Image 1 (cartoon, rainbow, N blue to C red):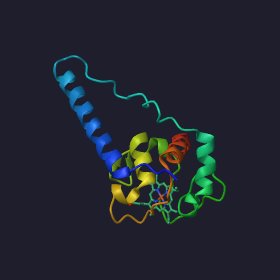
Image 2 (cartoon, rainbow, N blue to C red):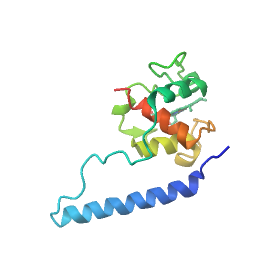
Image 3 (cartoon, rainbow, N blue to C red):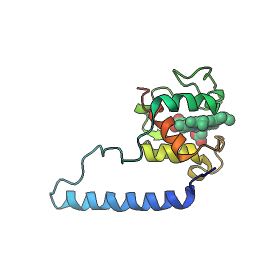
Image 4 (cartoon, protein in one colour):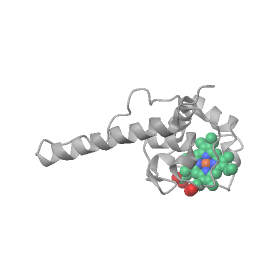
Length: 138
Ligand code: HEC
């Protein structure tokens, strides 16, 4: 099964993101407006929400999380994931963006070492679908 290498891929991605943010700040500083507040979802990030809903059930995320619309997802071990589209931070450590949320779901220990959220062996593609569903919760 192909799992993307989270450590390298994410390190590269976050470096690219940091460079982009610097470029935006620089542009803003020169009075050129910088970048739009809400960047469009990068191509390749868009998942399938309906498939995501089924995957959330299949992977048993609901044994620890309350997730509206997902059958039997009433767990209380982890925080409820209702209204996740409005949540500002993921687990209190990362700004809630699609890229970060995929990273969290694929490899929570890399984001927050020692977290009680286990590595669920979710692929990046599956995580993108889950994220698409979680972002329908407003
Ligand atoms: C064994 C229980 C458990 C399972 C199974 C589990 N999680 Fe978690 N999850 C947690 C815990 C505990 C936290 C809180 C972690 C923290 O704050 O460090 C968490 C945090 C999260 C968060 C961040 C919540 C917030 O408030 O920002 C998301 C999103 C999430 N989990 C998604 C998932 C998904 C998707 C799955 C299934 C692939 C899943 N979880 C499976 C226990 C679990």
